[in-house]
Image 1 (cartoon, rainbow, N blue to C red):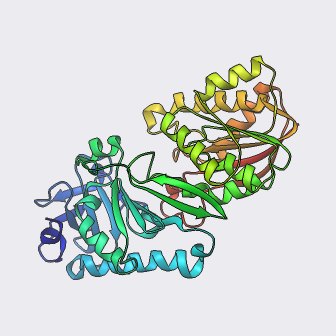
Image 2: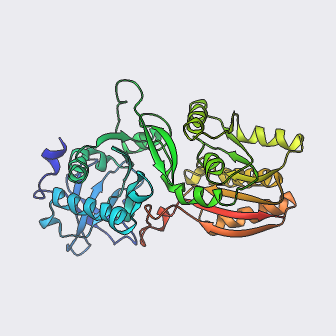
Image 3: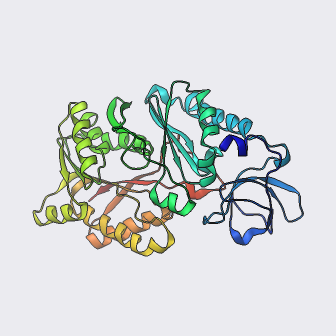
Length: 395
């Protein structure tokens, strides 16, 4: 179906804008007229004067009605040529500029708007490529997308992912892959991790924290490390293997992720104490026991997913950080993270300051960081700068 609909530019449905958007997204109020477009279709976009404006993915049921992915003349647009150029450009950034294969075989190949493919992220894990869709339009052209990647990775196996929330909002369904789990082992900075391509969160692993894991490990020598919301053990295993941590406790509520953290520790021949528990409950228990740690890493799941959850999520971030700060021994290191795109870095730093005040702790901010360079941010889409990581010394 994808090749039949999208292989040629001729005959694309037309959408006329009432006014141009500031960034790559256009919402319903910005659309003047729409000619016979169906949800998930690629459309030719024209400005209010009828001049060619670009090509977009259209979905009237989505909060983002138009995802404008190119300003090319729609009358000359060819989808396969376009995808080949965008994918080649994305691969060149990771291979030729960043030279990521020298230090890891797991990294992001496409980061949404920044790589000119809105509604799509792509991660590679050795010879496995995971496509995560945020847009019905991108999902409908997956055969074309895979064909573009096969020119660079002919032996790759592809996997499709999307959250239940995205599938419901955008109006598509990805059927689970048949058969048993599909696991592969990757290496980054000399640390190995096992990844299940058919389970877990996002695409199965968080490549965005690679540089932050490495920096945190450099501060861990001789310290007792508490890794909260540890998922499959990333920060804690780095601290044990590369950082020379004295002890590592990894706390994760998901039992499957907790078991995988155990396997990852064994793979790397390091010892950690994996605890399957709610992080809030565990932190309060440690406070009652008057436990303190030389390093605490707090990397919770996304607490603000939409505007309706914003106030509740901000309160959780403040409470999370307040309690976690209370567990850091004087002179210890605190690494706190947020992956909520709707909470900018300045606000997250403000939340941390408030949490420190409430905890009665003095905090020195050593470094403010984000995702690795394989997660670039488009200048006209600052919301893409979703990950925040602040390294602190607690007095």
